[in-house]
Length: 375
Image 1 (tube, rainbow, N blue to C red):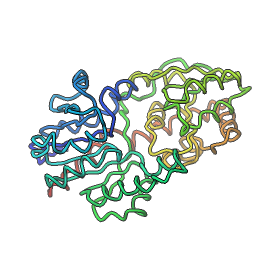
Image 2: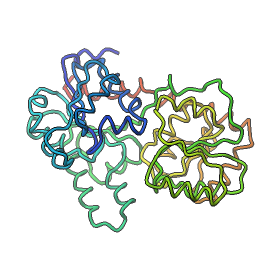
Image 3: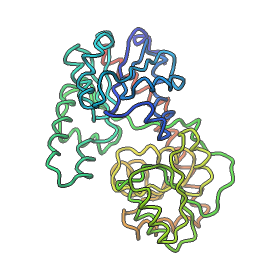
Image 4: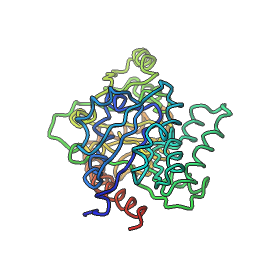
C-alpha cells in the first residue's frame, strides 16, 4: 500500500537509555533492530536515530537506509543527564520532525519532554514493561513506584501507545487506563531470512538464544538435561555466563556456549538443531522464539505471559512449567518423536508467516502514524 501522506514527514526514534548502534552490533542484533526502520524509511522523508553512542555509531551507517540519519550522543558521558538534555541539544532537528517514537520505556522521558516543548505527536512503544521487569529483578526495592510513575506519565502524554504482547496490553489498560489510541503490534520476524533450510540436523541437539541472565532460567534447563543424551547450544552473553559453564560441567551436560552471533547468521545455526527451547521465568514478546519458529523448529517454552500467547500447546509447540522436572519431561516427550517434531515445526512456521511477518507489522505502524497525522 502507498502512504503518500508520510512522504514529506519525519520520524524521530529515541533509543533506550544507554543503548547505541554499537550495542546492537556487539550483541548481534543490529540487523534485526533496524529492519523495521529501513522499511518505514521507504515512506518517510527522513528518520532520525537518537542514540547513546558517540561518533563511533556513524560506523554503522551501512546498515541503514539512505534517509535514516544517526544523531550521536554529545556533550556528556552521563546517560541520564544526556537523556534530559536531548530535547534541547537537538532542538533544530526536533522542531522539524512530525512524530516522536520511543523504543522502550527506559529513557522515554526524552521523547515526552520533546513532545511538551515542540508539540509533536508522540508514540510510546514498549517491548517489555519496565515496572514488571524492575520488580522481578529487584523484588525488595522501594523504587518500583518510580518505574510506575515513569510509565504513567508517558502513557498519559502519548498520542498513541504500542505494546508488543497481549499480557502487556492488558497490564497497560488495567493500570494506566489510556485515553489515546492503544494497539498491539507484536515483534516482527524477517520471514524471508528466518526460514526452513535444507541443512543436516545434529542428532539430539537443542538450541537456546538469549541473554545469559536470571530471567532466562538456564540453571533449571541445565539441571533438566543432566543424564540425558542431548547437546545444548547457548547463543548469547550475560552476567551468568561463567557460572552456567561451571554448572554445566558439574552436571556433565554437553553445553556449547557460542557467545553472541550476528542476527542474520542465526537461521543457519537454528536449522542445524532439532529443537529450540526458551525456559524463561518472565518475558515480554520474545523475538528469539519467533525467529526459531519461523525457521520451522519445534519449540518448547515455559507457560508464562509472552510465551503462551505465541505457543499453542500441542499445536505449534510445547508448553511446560519453569521447574527443571517439567522442562526435562517436555524435552523427553518431544525429542524422540519425529512425526510430532515435523508437525509442530511446520505449524510454528505458519504461525509466524501469518501473524508476525515484517511486512504485516510495518503496515500496522504506518496506518497508526497516518491516523496520528489526521488522515
